[in-house]
Amino acid sequence: MLYRLDDIDCVSARGHSALGGALAIQAVWRYDRAVDMARLTDFHAALRRGTLGRVVAPALIPAAGDRWSARAEFGPIEVASAPIPRAELGEWIAQQARAELRTYGGPAWRLAVVDLDDGGSAVSLLSSHTIADGRAFCAAITAAVADEQIELDCRGDEFGPMRQLFSDLGAAAKRLVPTLGAVVLGVRLAAARRAEVRTDSGSDRDFRVPTVDATIPAELWRAAAQARGGTVTTLAVALMAEIAGESGRVDEQGRARMMMPVSTRTDGDERANALGAIEFEVADAPTDLAPLRALMKTKLAAEQVVPPVISMAVALPSGLYGVLARQAATDATRTVCSNLGTLDPAILEIDGSPAASITLGLINQGLNSRALLAARGGILHGVFFECAGDITVRINGFHPPALENADQLADLVQRVLARYDLKPAFR
Image 1 (cartoon, one colour):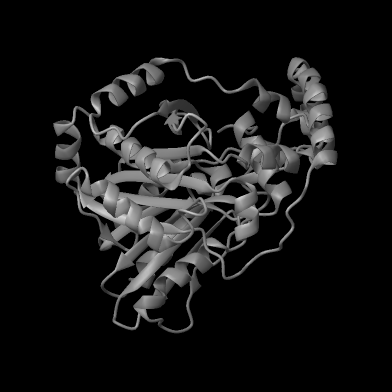
Image 2 (cartoon, helix red, strand yellow):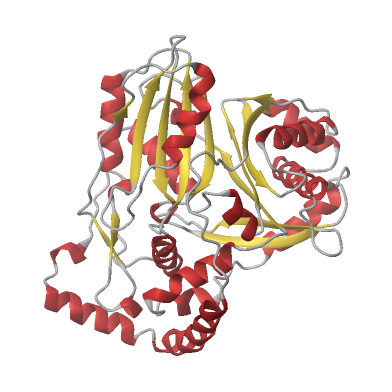
């Protein structure tokens, strides 16, 4: 088991701690029946015995990097006190997305269930992105369904204060070059902090980042992509690029600036976030997907390199993490497209039998007001995956004035997919 966090995980933990809200992943299962609570309780216990059973413990010397710990606090299954109308399910899901997560010490994830007044039900699992990226999160769920257990060998838990100090000193000494670079980065961030115009509008409990969940039969999605010279992934990117173009989320040349996370995970890889990324521009509505496919293939063939700023950031003083995180989160033209691939159908069976559907999405708890999100340049992020014969997509989008609410976003999704002869079913 990894002792220290990988640099990207460490920066993630500290950055979101500084901002006061986690970057999280939320899975939602919908049922046309009641949930089997006994089996869900077993699933909850199994999650604690898997990779989601670890949390982050702070280093005594920050430049050493934080460490993993199995000494975690876990929350109970949160059961709603009474059934709610199905029409209010969206608000319940949004409330769960705002639940407090503590990457340091825990609870770093929360499981909740609600009954609906028509006999149905829903389950939400919200997890800090720092302890698992999308694929690791899904793998942890399917492992818990199978009741697989791993040995969380977090040896630092057994260290006394002096041994921990010497361990941190040794780790910090090995990071001399990044630490020297952190001095320069720290000076720049300190100057940026003095010049910052902060948007402090407070949390708006009525505000929800506009979100749509939609499904399309995988057979139809694949056929639409192949007929235009593309792949399942190419079509997902094309959808996001067209939504960006129609909402005005483009650069000065009118191009959609795309960023797609790429998994760098290998067999036995214990990193929480094993991710690189490719970035490219899409100039026109890509009805012919072949050129876009070729461009993405070239980008994917290049080696995925972690930016040097990540290694330097580990050695930053804690007071500068908020500045770094705000800078990284501020972009008025970037569009993100995350493809989780094909999921194991067992992910539907957290209570022993398949759910009617599952959706997965990214939650940024720090974006809790219109004013703050507008100051950060808005957002356009899509998560795609295939499971049990369907392509499921969750898109978060806010880019005034063209894109300010879920109705506008749903209309955009529907109109763009119609160009590919696809009709989504919205959840």
